[in-house]
Length: 82
Image 1 (spheres, rainbow, N blue to C red):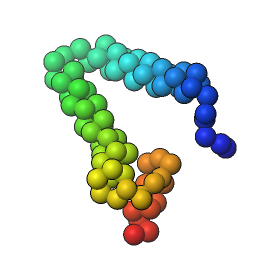
Image 2: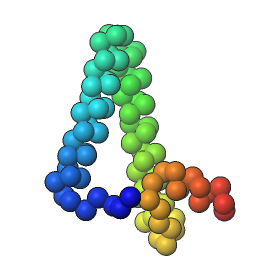
Image 3: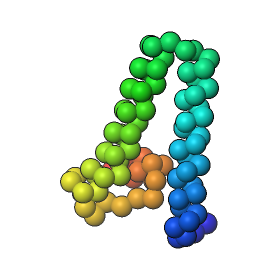
């Protein structure tokens, strides 16, 4: 499989990911409509966003500029070999 190069397709993919996250969050809150669930969901989302930022920005720009990988699975495989 090759990389997606079409900007329209990339935007579409991004929109689908956003919609998926919004729907999953809405269903979770609808099933458990309390303050604790909402706060824990917000903290979980924030934590995953920071981990993603670390994996794809901090490592490549601050730790090892020569370290490139295609995704989180490739990142984990590289770390296990090191």
